[in-house]
Figure 1 (cartoon, rainbow, N blue to C red):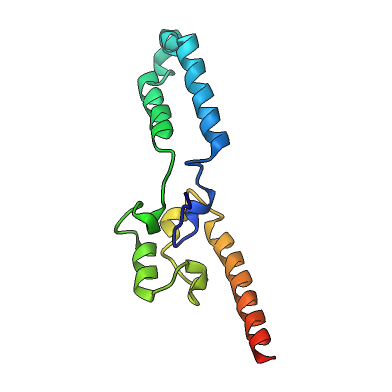
Figure 2: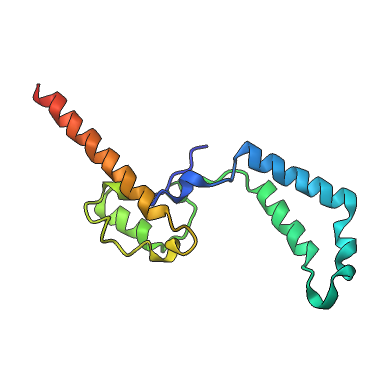
Length: 139
């Protein structure tokens, strides 16, 4: 399934990635086989963590193997990036002439600092393609 978003964040999503899911499956198998939660009492003064929550996270990844991205119905309905792209009738943020100055990405840049840089690179490629299309049409 193709994961699509306006901002490009879904391009690097690991949901549905076969290698990622195999790794998560192996981790689940090891934890179950070695009964890792039994060791929680060995951690001094609360240094351990909740193995039940850890297992819950692993199971979540294994049961959410496909995400269609925000364009396919997932994501935050009130995402400022999504709202803006829809209002501007653009398919991807790299198509927007105001991308460089846009501050709608600030909440994502903390966790994904390269997101906007990658979009700006895609924007340059997009503009180059448009330029070459115009040259071809002018012939």
